[in-house]
Length: 124
Image 1: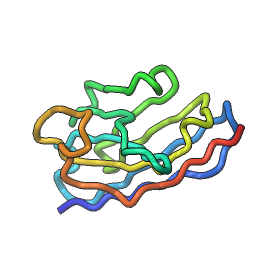
Image 2 (image 1 turned 180 degrees about the vertical axis):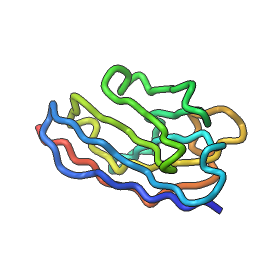
Image 3 (image 1 turned 90 degrees about the horizontal axis):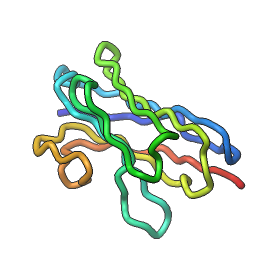
């Protein structure tokens, strides 16, 4: 069993930056691919970014490519999402997800573990 706890959300002005963290429990964290998803009010949960188990490959939604960076520190059992040049459209609850056996990182249904989410609000 893996428990995920996100932190780092908050209120920021457009153009600002935030870094989200997702701390994981469990001995097998280093073997898991990890993902970040977000869900805005009234919208479906959408893929933001993912990283392979060893950090060698990263994947991004087109809407965040060039602005967000995902990274993974296996020694700290933590995955990060550095968010720069934030826009009001980035406002959402951001969720961390772990363990993607299928290897298709873009689908929320393919992840086995989820955090409780952290809210990000970007003001214009």
